[in-house]
Length: 262
Image (cartoon, rainbow, N blue to C red; front, side):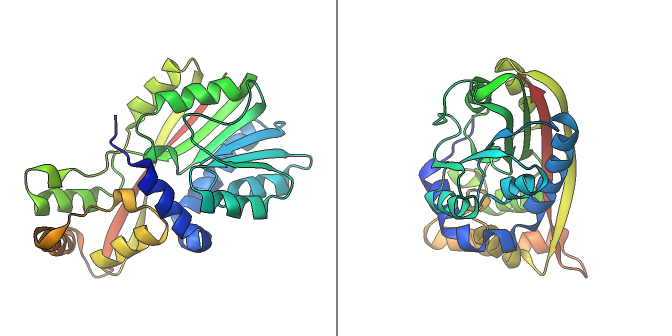
C-alpha cells in the first residue's frame, strides 16, 4: 500500500489545471494509445466514465469520434473537475474519489482512466468500484504509471538523502500488482502490457519544474530545513552525474496498460 496524501494530490492538481494540457505531453501520448485500445475493445460503448479525468481532454476526444456519447467524469481535484465541466457541456462531472465513485451500480459500458491510478494508496478498492459501476459485459481500460517511472529521480534522491525517513519516495505499482488487483476485484483480465517513454530535459532542475507544472508533486522528493535543501542540491548533482549527457537528462515514464471486462 502506498502512503498517499490525497489532500496534497488534490491541491497540486487543482493548481495545475489551467496549464496541464499544454505541459502534459507524455500523458497525451498515453491517451492516444488508450483511445486506440477502446476503438477495438469497446467500439459501441456510449455510456462512458473517465476517472481521474483531469481537464476532460480524453472524453472530449472520444466524443468527437463517437456521436451520441454520454460522458461522465470524476476527478479528485476540484480545479480539474471544473475544467472538465467547462469542456464537456451536458456531461455528468463530479469532484470525487476513485475509491468511492458518486454513481449507481451498472451505469456504464466503458470505464476509462489514464495517468491517475498511480496516485492511489491501493488499487483493489478502485477496481472494485469500477466493477460496480460497469454494466455486465462492460469494458475497463486503464493506463497508469508503473514501477520504473522516474527511476532516475527516485534513485538520485535515495542516494542523496541517505538512510532514514527522508529516503522514502513515491512507490509506483508494477504490472503484476495491476493484474492481481483487477482479478481480486472480480474483473476478467484481457491484457496487461507495459512500455517505457522518455522525455529529455535540459537538466535535473528542469525535471522537477516540469513535474510541478503538471501537478505531479507526489513524485517530487523533498525535505524541510537546511538538511533538506542540502539533500535537494545533492539530488540535482547526482541526477546529472548519473544520467546527464549532451542532450540533457532523461525522465522515464513506465506505462502499464490494462484491459479488463466485467
